Image (cartoon, rainbow, N blue to C red; front, side, top):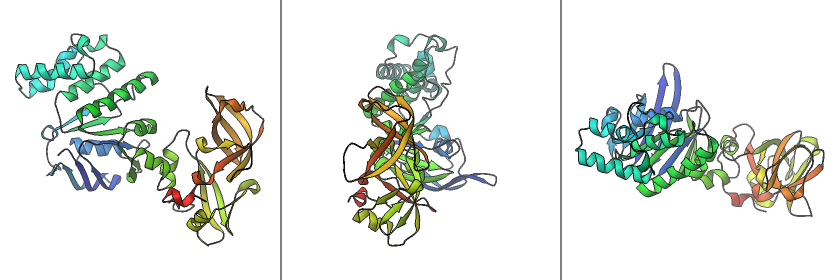
Amino acid sequence: MSTVTFEHISKSYGDVQVVKDMNLAINDGEFMVLVGPSGCGKTTSLRMIAGLEEITEGTLKIGDRVVNDVPPKDRDIAMVFQSYALYPHMTVRDNMAFGLKLRKLAKSDIEKRVNEAAGILSLEKLLDRKPKELSGGQRQRVALGRAIVREPSVFLMDEPLSNLDAKLRVQTRAEIARLHQRMGTTFVYVTHDQVEAMTMGTRIAVMSDGLLMQVGSPQELYDRPSNRFVAGFIGSPSMNFTEVTADNGKLTGPDGWVADLPGRLKNAVGAVNGRKLIAGFRPEHLELKTDETETVTIPGKADVVEYLGNEELLHVTGLGKDIVAIVDSDNRVKPGDVLELILPYSKLHLFDAESGASLISDRATAAA
């Protein structure tokens, strides 16, 4: 079994705790993405799996084996780093075969594994070149190939696309996803890019300040974030937030804004008047108002319009702040236009103002 299990794992450097009581079960054959801002503990967590960081507290298992004190070479893992770390004087073939030669595998086995990996990654015509003769994307594929030939039970990847340009990132992202589907091996992938996380992960673990904030499928994190941090981190552009107060079944906000609460959303808020909340709504769920519908209405004035082809990204002054909306480009909004944006109640998120916890644990709660 290629499972990876964190049981109350903590990591400290002196008095600074960078990973705090982490519990996470990564399933056999799963593509798990650890995502979060810089300094959240995601790379440290990956390095603990690899054996490159000592565990301060807790138990780490790969399969059924506790590996806290197992050397990296004996953990049956392969790691792809942010830098390609290829030997410049060796050919692609020798770079991919180097680790297998150290393990003293038979020459025929090495050749077979290298050729199979080269076929998977379309490197057959590049095997006799040296790294300086390759593009960035090709070098990254060689680094992947070097990991593949080891045939590990777990692949670990630490931001492997961050050195590539935008177009190559998209291409290589798809190649890694196909590689996972083809091999069916457990992948643990670290990134700060939530788009990478959403497009690649079977499940995503969102981290902040050393804490595991939420684990779930991309759709679950997008539709049902457990707190304000996850809601703001997942999605691009990020979710809009505004401070509101719940009073007598209504939400009141800046600039005299008032919105009625439908029944089940009203129940989620509770009967306490004057409760301070944070309302959240995604740019892509806003529309320009064209007729009377059962929606929340948000007035504002367009400041900046970014034309993106099939859609426009609007920066709108409303509710006392900058609100971002994505609308169809056929609307042809111009800077200075006075607008009314509408939002379906089913897409309105509410968070406790103090704890940041979501009041909408199930999206059905938000329905009228």
